[in-house]
Structure formats: structure tokens, C-alpha cells
Amino acid sequence: MKKWISLAAIVASCGLAWGTGRLPHTAVVSAQTTGAALYDWITDGGDNQRTGWNQQEKTLTKDNVKNLKVLWKLETHNQVRALHSLMPVLVVSQLTTESGVKQVGYVAGISDNLYAFDTDTGKILWQKHWEYVAPAGRGGGGRGGQPQDPAHLGFLQPGGSSDTPVIGSPDAQGRRPIYFVTGDGMLHILNAATGEDLQPSYMFHLGKGWSLNLIDKVLWMANTYAGDSISAVRLDDPQHKVMNFNAGSGGAWGRRGAVIDSTGAAWTTTGDGVYDPTSDPPRYANSVVGVQIVGSELKLKDYYTPTNWAGCASAIWTRTTRRRSSTSRDAS
Image (cartoon, rainbow, N blue to C red; front, side, top):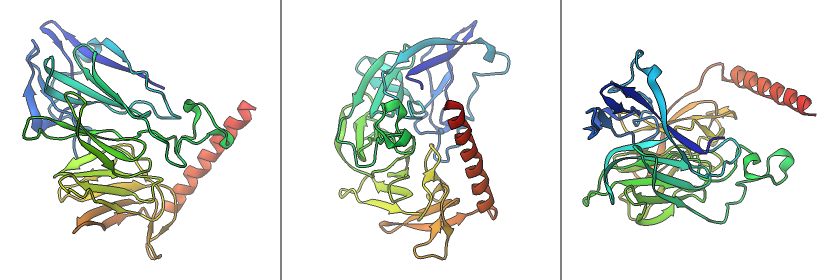
């Protein structure tokens, strides 16, 4: 499991430039000698639709990609938990820090760690670690339910911070907030330049949360093992009312989290479970589910369930069970 971050770069005759995914609507010309354009990548997947597509990427080509080299490595010392370690890197192209304007990268670790680093040097600018009493059911034993070291915890509920943060627009004082949910369900809003709290933390939602999404001052998080599938909170609501929607069955899956469409509706996928939209309450396992804010509540907008969902789920379960049985026999 990875505790390291590596930076690869294109080494060209005109100098040095490196390419990350970037948001096309936030292009800022870099101060690097190559004059390469840099772009913010402030949410998992690069945009609210989680496309992962940097349409403005002009640095990498089929001819120069062979020149990629590792420039530096950064040891985070983040403790792995089961299958989880470091989350996708976010980037602010030009940020005013105590040591000048820099391109800053951010990476979260499953063990409630958050790091900010200089992308040119790999030097950590600031880092935060949170301690708390683990919520019930989190960080449980893996094999046979017995206590294990963190690397061998049960992978479904290993505890810790499983979300990728999201970075907001500058406030009136020019400070960029970075939003991060720790494993105790608390939402932390930090100054991206210093790591200091911009406001007191408050409860967002317990569970195994996936990547945060932010649009129109609404923060979204898809959940599993929390009794809710999607949660949202208006950042300008002084009461911090958390709106929740429960799909009834099947956890919310997909590490990139909720996808936001052009109407502001949020979409997520649900895992294996019971599909019965006629039950009370309805159950939408094995589906794509969309919700929207109505007043101060999340309401179902629409959903899609494959007609052959039962056969697909059965086939996946059968293959998984066979793999586990084979592994057990091999290990015995």
C-alpha cells in the first residue's frame, strides 16, 4: 500500500514542465520557465461530473511521454488501513503562501491525515492529523472478527478518513478553503495556504464517505454504512442542517463520490442489496440514483436500474465467493 507520492515530469530541451489534470475554466499561466499553462484540479475527477478529463492538457504527447522521469518522492508516514491509503491529489495552480506564490498539491491519507506540499520540490508546507474516539463499528477486525493491525482491518469499515477533500473559491480575504471530513464525521474547513481552521468544525455525517463535491455553496458526500446514501449541507447555513437521502439498500459505491449534473441534482450508484421500489420505504440497490434539494430536504429525482440487475449481482457474488474460497484453500 502506498505511503509515497511521486512527481513525474516531461524533460524537454526548452526546460522543465509537468502536467496534472486541471480544470479548463480556471487556467492560469505558470511562472515556470517553459510558460506552460497550469490549471486548478480542486475536486476528485477534475470537475463536478467527475469526468477525469483535462481538456486543456497540451504538455503530454505520444512523442514526449517516454521522457517522463521521477523528480522527487514524498514520504507521508500515513498508516494504511486495509485496502486504503492515500487519496487522489488535488492542485491549486497559484496560491499565496508564507514563502511566496506556489503551486500547491494536497493529499489526504486514510488515517485522518491531510498534507499540503510544494509541487516543485515535494516539500511539505503543512500537515494535519486528527485524533478522536473511533465511532462504534469502525476499524473492526478483519479475519475472523479478531483485532488486527491497521493494515489488516476489515476492508468494508476500516475507519479513518476515506474521502478526498474539495477546495473552494477564495473568500473575501483571498483565502481558499479546503473541506475535509475526518473519520468521526466532523467537517473541517481549513485555510489551504496554512492549514489553519477558517471556522469551527461541525458534524457532517458518519459513515464511509467518498470524495466531496462542491457546487453553489452546497457540499455533497456519498456515503455507505451510515444509514444514508447521499448527504448535503449548505455552507452558508448557520445551523449546519445536514440533508440526507437513503436509497434503502445497497451502500453508495464509487470512490469519486456524488456526481452533480447541470441542474444541480446529485447522482450516485448503489451496491448489491434489495431492489424493490414498491416497498415502504422503497429500496434502490444495484441502481443509479439521483436526488435534488427541495426546500431543506433531499428528494428522489430519478433512478435507473438495469433490467438484468439480479443476474449481474449473482454472477459477481459467485465469482467473488469462488476467488475467496480458492484463496483460502491456497493459504491453508
